[in-house]
Length: 214
Image 1: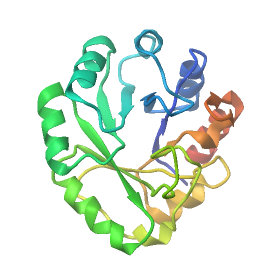
Image 2: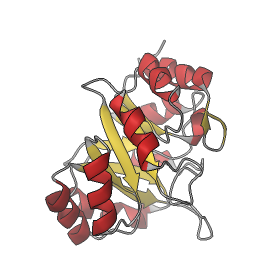
Image 3: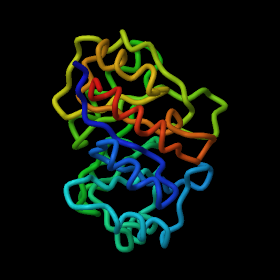
């Protein structure tokens, strides 16, 4: 039976919170990146994060954030983790952990075997890893593009830190993705949306059922 913890990323409406919780999500992701259709302002994010019960991880997705932006974000929104989805160096990851006092998940884009060593590099400094499909060169967004990579690239591999599979996951393919990769955790955003930036409660529920084997 398929069994993996999962994260619903790109929560953008208050109704998304109970939908994700009902489906069994262990993590809720809030996006702070102006180019994304899932981008949140701080008041909206604060209200939604405040409605999340204890034990569910509230994760802020940021892209190459400045120190000032981090200070404002972490000083305003109640968060449990930061997800770094830009070109942050290992040194920057370490600095952000020290500055904010929050655990950090680092996204690493994969397209081919040549990308895998970077996962090991970031495993030395991040608390968790998000193994995602590398975005196309002309992509506006570093993630949430609905693209998958060849899951066989990481079949049988493991890392020293907890990791999460992302990229093109849907209710229809997530069970197979977990089977092929052995992923202990998965992340979905566009795969449970009615349109970019708008979550679909039925798709969120279907994703949770697929994960649990229900």
